Length: 374
Image (cartoon, rainbow, N blue to C red):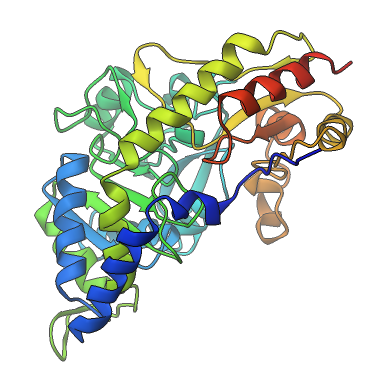
């Protein structure tokens, strides 16, 4: 029996191998490996794609979020000790970006239908110290609504999207800038191009998108040792730059991200239509937005038994994520927070294969196998 791998990056990238090799070779031959033409070109293309005025290519998705918050501190919009509202159900990078800037994460529980931050619960957590909301478009599902727009304006809050998993997703409600694509909804967004993402580099990489020139200039300087020009450091900055080869690779793959997202949506539709057992809870397909299905995540009791059953039948799965941030050892100070929805999700979520190596027949076999589980 052939195993259906959860993820096969070699196969995923093989379809563009000739273009990727050509792009990397061109960058190598250029002789300019930091802050060269490949980075400038990718930033231009990414800003156009996300319908923002600026894109700044950086080292990874965590650094993208860290730099946004640090820039707001340098610009005087946020002060160390201030509060940032974050979802309790997210990958830890969201929270690390907050605490790394000596800011206080305020956890808000998820909407179980979307597994995203429950926007209806945000306002009750806003205090005089709240300065920002960081919605995460988890698993490729947009986290946005008219209420998010109104909260930002009513409480003078910055909205910083964690767009690590949802490039290309759209929602029916337009954001603060009149567009409806993730990465362009709020005041700024951090994006990850980790190799497993729908738009993945061949190493670590990330970006910030924004319409705010002042923020863009600050982020760009902070990412380059705090310098606005050579040997002139206006901030105590970092080295968080994207290299030329990753930028060249991403320019190639950006051309195909919409087709990749459509292919994933087709697999998600097969799962949604053909998984009929009551032993699992399927993710909600939202018909008023475009989900890009970075992950297709079920909820199931006795997860270990379920995963073992699937593996015995040649189907690999994964868990995103088994421990919520507030229960990680590094966040012991938050371990007594009462966040039962996040804990229940962490104990029950299972991600099905949805990468390039899964075709229609494989997806139907996965559905058939799941329906036989008892």
